[in-house]
Length: 172
Image (cartoon, rainbow, N blue to C red; front, side):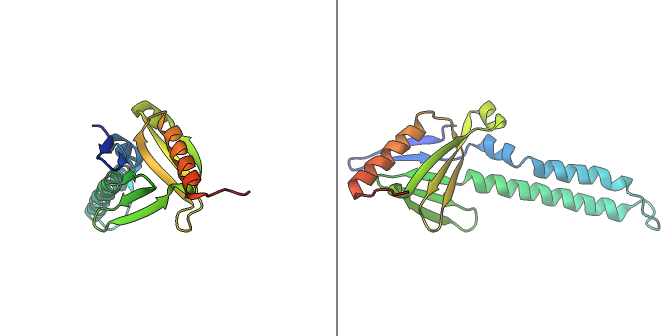
């Protein structure tokens, strides 16, 4: 599945990035593993007076199901995240039941950092971390987007162009 789209019309060019599904599944794989380990370990806990430990087995099953539900929610939440790069700003949309939209003007982006863990390198994704001067979002992480090596440079150029247009200069 392609996670990058160019949306062209006569007035603007927009670029949509979103986390890849296999990235989201790998990022939270520890949840079902923990649930399974607990489910398998519970029958070996010696408890006197409960007979065959049916109550503990039942609780372990409930715990395992809860960890699977948490896993599913986290994967869906991350997969539903959208990073829409418009002409003058970045629009971030997150959420499953409640939707949150954040808007960051390009001229507020101070620095970029491209991070690729070993698992990200295997599946062809990256995390792009943006350091901004935005009051609400000092550090924005674009998780699991496609590893487009040229994209950070394109974003850097868009930031510089927007800074020149708005007359914004950074003083350290």
